[in-house]
Length: 243
Image (cartoon, rainbow, N blue to C red; front, top):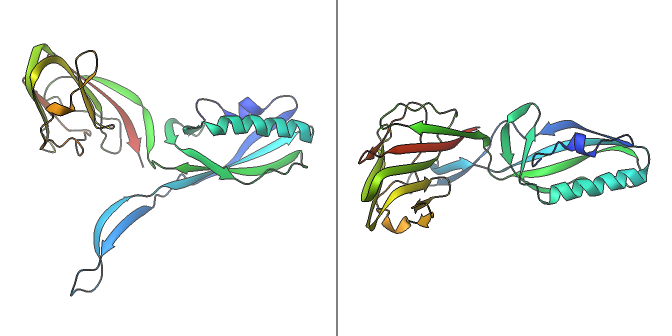
């Protein structure tokens, strides 16, 4: 959790802490919106998206006495207060973005006991470590992800330019830019839906063509990207995801 192994952090000569069970990581569920068309039987599916889930972690604590137990629970509360993500030893390459929401209450009178921690998995995708690609126009992408990703893309030109375009030739999605002021560096943060220019990271969204497919722009293995005019360099950074 946040780079800290709970079992190792809380365990010492006076207390043993062990994660004994984890539930909620497996099958996904979906929020589905439907409508009943006039004059027809049944329902029409309007949209479908991943629903948030709860991951439950069972901890077993065996302390020499209840005063040690209370100290460990207090230290645990400190970790949980600011927890933004968790990882598990059997999936050490995956990160789960969560918010701690509560759980069962420890018994103040029992030095040895188990209790449950519940985490709201609000973004129910499993993220891998960040990858960096030095990319060449029209090169076939090899993306370490089972799902399409929205990457960070840095485009550098030899000189300042006012207009450029980025196209995924596989999906036929485009991002088009035009502005009266020139820049030689542009950065697209597609996960955050932001665009900046210059080394000072100046906001550049005012130059984005309204018909650009920025919200839908993704990449996956086999895709090809083309920047026009041809830039001096293209750097792609992404986090692989899986369901």
